[in-house]
Length: 59
Ligand SMILES: [Zn+2]
Image (cartoon, rainbow, N blue to C red; front, side, top):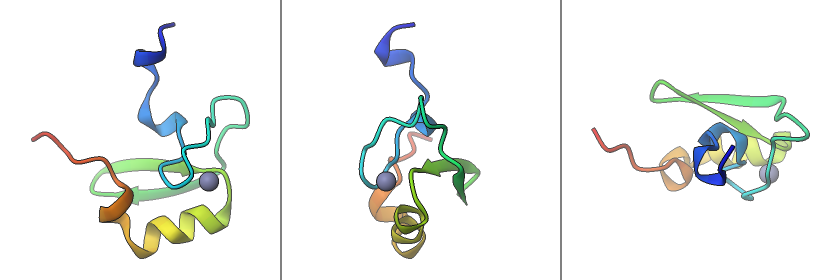
């Protein structure tokens, strides 16, 4: 699988950690997208300012 095919949920949007091996067990729902995090700390950072970390939606 090419790197470009990686779903964005495989990357921690806060610290950019690759979660494909550890499987992010911390999840947060934002605007119908589910984001995964390496730790509860990253999840809380995201939850505090989701618009800062979430990728801009194209639609
Ligand atoms: Zn993280």
